[in-house]
Amino acid sequence: MRILRAVLAAVLCAAAVALAGAAAADPGLNALARLESAATSVRDDGGAIVIDLALDRPVPWRLHLMDDPPRLVADFREVDFAGADPARADRSDRVGALAWGRFVPGWSRMVATLDGPYRIAVAAMRTEDAPGATLTIRLEPVAAAAFAALAAPQPSADWALPRPAPVGPPRPRQTGDRPLFVVIDPGHGGIDPGAEDGGLSEAAIVLTFARELAETLRRAGMDVLLTREDDSFVPLELRISVARAAGADVLLSLHADSLAAGEATGATVYVLDRDAADLASVRLAERHDRADLLAGVDLSGQGDEIATVLMDLARTETAPRAARLAHALADAIGAEGLRLHRHPVQGAGFSVLKAPDIPSVLLEVGFLSSDDDRRRLADPGWRARMQRAILAGLQDWAVADAAEARLLRR
Image (cartoon, one colour):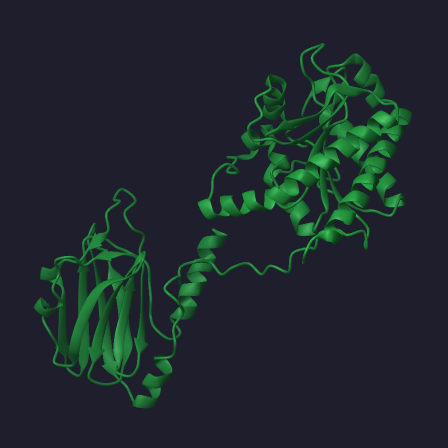
C-alpha cells in the first residue's frame, strides 16, 4: 500500500501541469492493448478540440503539453498502434498533424500538433464498457502566457516508478582508524524459538550469550549493535538490513542448534557457500531459515539479473574477508582451549550470510543436542571464555583486514 500511495502521489503532482490518470490492465491478458481505429476520433467542439482514443483494454497513461510548436503528448504503458492509421481518424481543423507509435521500451506515444495554445480541460478514461476503454481529452484555448506555463518540461517516461530512496555515501572499509563496528545477530526469537533441548531454548540462550558478548566487545572499544534485544521475531532479511543501515563492519550471527545425537558437538563457524551440499548443513539451513517459512516468502533467491551480477561482484571482495574472519574466530576459540567441531569452518547457504557487502559469519556456539555442549552453554564461566575468544578473533582479523584495506587503491 505504501508503494501504491507513492505512485499515486507522483501522478497527482504531475497533474499540476497536466491532468493524468491510470487504469489497471487486465491481469489475464499478456498482449499489448490495441487502438480501436473505428471508435477513435479527433473533432471540433465549438472552440475546443475533443479527442477520443478507444482501446481494447485500459492501460496506465499520462498527458502533457509541449511548445514550439504547440503539441499535446499522450504516453501509454503500452499500446500497440500497428495497423492504425492516424490519417483515418476524424480530424479537427485545429490539429495540424497526428502521429502515434512506440516511444521507448515499455511506452507508446501519441502526438497531436495544435494550431495554437490550449489547456487540458478534461482528461478521463472511461471503462464502463469493459474490457474496452476510451480516453477522452478536451482541449480549450488559452492565452499564450498561460500555455507557456502549462508546457513546462515534464518528467521522463518512467513517471510511474517510485522515487529512489535517499542513500548516503557507502561506509568505507575499516582501516583501523576507528572502532570496529560489529552487529551481533542472536538467532531466532519470538514466534521462532529455534532448537529446544534439555530444558534450554536456542533463542533464549543465544540472546543471553549475545548480550554478554556485546558487553565484552564494548569494553574492548568496539561499537556493537544487536539485531534483537529481547525475545522478539526479526525476519532474516531485516537482520541483514539492520546491519547494512547501521554501517556494520561485521555481521556475526549466533546459534546453538540441535541435531541428532552424536552428529555435532563443539563450536562451528559458517561462511556463505550457496553450493554447500553437506547433509548437516542442509538440515541446519532448514532450521536457521525457518523464519522465512513463518513470516512469509523468502525472496532472497529472486531478483533482477543486474542486481545479482552487482552483488556477485561485491562478494568477490567480501567473501575472502569473511573466510579469513571465520578462520580467525576458529583459531582464537582453539587457542582458548575450547571445544571445536571436527570441521570448525564450513560453508552453508544460510540466509543471514547473504549480505554481499558485509563480511558475515554464523557461529554455532555449541549444539543443544549435545549433553556436553548444553552444560557448557549453561555455564557463565565457559561463556565468558568463549566471548573472550571471539573478541580475540575479531581483533586479530581487524588488524589484518585493516592492513589489507590500506593497500587498496581508492
